Length: 229
Image (cartoon, rainbow, N blue to C red; front, side, top):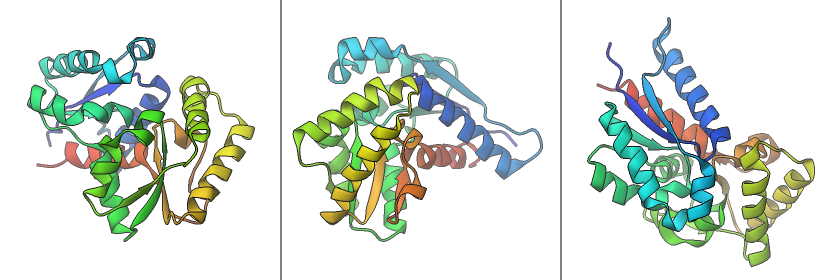
């Protein structure tokens, strides 16, 4: 059996890239057994470079990473961050390799659960720009985000300065739960953890509504692609 070679654009942040590597290898081994694990290439970006340029201006950094992966023999590309999917369609057209899209895979899972309205937490870009919500809406899913700017700013700050550094703060978790409960009160039937670091803080155990861990969903989709023929 020949596994497809996967190219991972990581380092955005390295904390969640560890989870991708773990989930993908564990998933392939669960399917194939023995000593079967992923054949993959990781291009780990320096997150400081992204922050310096800002996400909106990071296309060239991501493009360079994807081109390097293609030259190394990758058969598909995985952007290991929700916010990076701001450029997913443009990169896929440029690189001419399949991209396993985190929002598409998450939408499929939401539809399996027959939910129509979800709450979304992520970076300020994921919550405020339309690349994420429009993709979900194309699957018939309504998206709710925190209404107040100061709350969205708070989520952005803690994702960047705490979770992106691997810091898990109990007070931050309590505040996130309050924020999610407000989304539930507004009609959210499920919660999308739309940042690959947020699962460090929140999980299904914290809520009665379905929680969609985009890191795990994305990784599972990568596994299925890698073993497909």
